[in-house]
Image 1 (cartoon, rainbow, N blue to C red):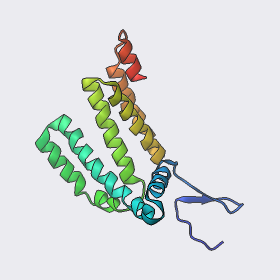
Image 2 (image 1 turned 180 degrees about the vertical axis):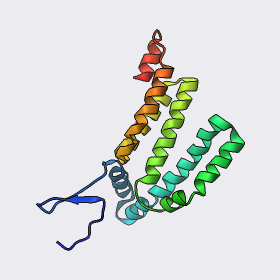
Image 3 (image 1 turned 30 degrees about the horizontal axis):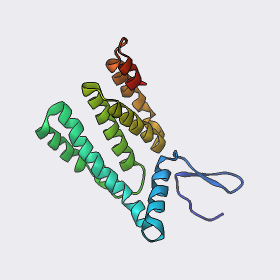
Image 4 (image 1 turned 135 degrees about the vertical axis):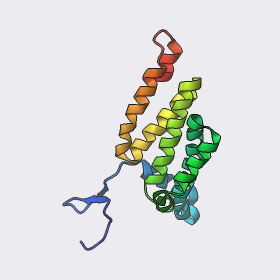
Length: 166
């Protein structure tokens, strides 16, 4: 009864504890533990947030480059990278870095699909945005830009467009 289990857990009357957040981040940690084994598994878990933050910054550059060009894309990435919030959450083993990585790459791939078509871009971008929802519930709001891109890319008389949008 005196154990500290953290603020992100909910306890019931039977003494069982459940996480407040969805299962996505737990699956990432489970995969790292499984792949790393007894010797490297825990260390691999602590590399998830820095690796996701690094991938998110690269994706951030690519996303901004689509809109404002390479030079300002690089400046924008540096602004995000030097943000105190980003610096604080990069080495913190919580859901923020992994969620940011999934969101940035998901939006980037959906914008690429909107511009260039390609079934794999649509599916991987949609999968990553769906995966972000499994890490943090609030990312469900990303259905709005995803729906907008789907509507803008849908061509009613083109069967391939319906398959990609689906």
